[in-house]
Length: 131
Image (tube, rainbow, N blue to C red):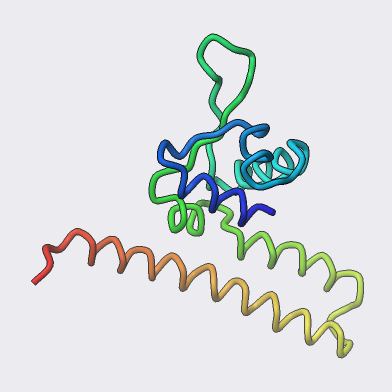
């Protein structure tokens, strides 16, 4: 559902909708759309803003959000690694499950570092005039 909501906000001409509008556009309940936007706000892909003259809230795509959110402090891959580390504490490091979890943690931390480097490279590329 978050991907569908992000897609809807991305293709909407204004890039802004309320949860009710998102629900109607996607053919889902406003509650389902609201849950999705709550997640998207949490990871920094969507902003909450008040509707002028109303008590309603609308949601807006963040400019360049698809890569900015991926390298934000405490990025998504680091969060996954942190959760997996909690599992490691539960199963122990000297077990087969512990070895699998350790590899997953290491992989997600590696991804977080690599994504940050790729974004820097992307930004440098975008700042250079096309040949």
